[in-house]
Length: 423
Image 1 (tube, rainbow, N blue to C red):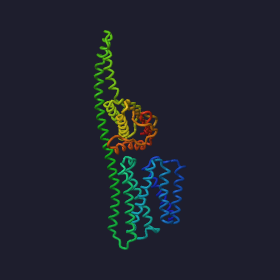
Image 2: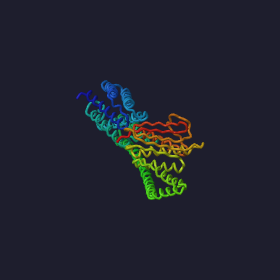
Image 3: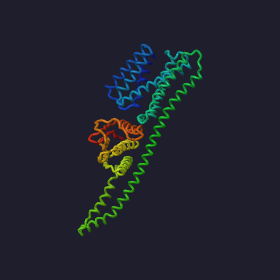
Image 4: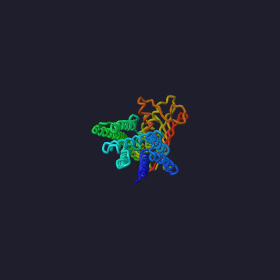
């Protein structure tokens, strides 16, 4: 088979791996052929020219980097920082895989690796297999969860591969330029680089699993509290049902004797109001969060109104717990900062419309009017974690291809979120 055909197939595989990598990590692929076809044709043409005419390695590097960023930035609608991050990450992994395979073949086959022949063909196949394995392994640990990482851990995702690439480049010089080679040292160094990368991503995967476990444990605790609340109100309902005949009889007797029955009716009204404050939405996680925050509002004398009219909620319980928990904690905290005698209130509405879940939260706030709020300040001592809570809300909304709007008008803070609600 002519080498130019092999080079063309190699380019097609590189572009296919690029597409696979980005679709595993980025959201919002522009699937219309009129958009993606020209981008891939331009990329294929540029890379083919470099392969056919054996241009300078610096030109090849420039074309590779340019086409990678072109694909990430034009064919996906995810957040800009994620597209830039994963474009850079793909380049790092691609160069790591290529350098690793090149060094191994150089140690085994000598200097013939760069020339047309079986070693070069094996190198092409091995590089693509290595890159495919990296894509599958890393995506299994990181897919759709990078937004949940603190910045200090997220930086490791790019710093470790960059450091590995630098070390591999130095080792490559040792392998290709040194007169006396210490192959054992090279093998140990390569194994250390591979282990370092695997360990970092395994740590990140473990960290994310632990975070989800802690949130799940909190959900179970909240649901247990909610179950106790429901049992208490069920007992109250039984008591009211048992006493309702006597209450009605007492009211009738009071009216017959021209006595004031207002106190009896008021007691019944208070009991009914207390029971009606319990949320029964059919979603145990939503009920647990809303009932707990409603109880907190009552303890702090904050008027709380809740309306839930969603048939099915397909958002993951962990995400729903974090979303509502953080948003309502912010609302209760804002009510606690009021100083001018304004009545504190929290108004919550959750409803479904077609394939969307709409969440609206309004609360009184001591803030200046602002039409678009992107970050929240906190009066808490731990401002870093509180800010991370608001970032978590935005990350979850983005993960469900949602929209989010927050603002203040006439002393009322409004937060509206629209999320995809599909099974």
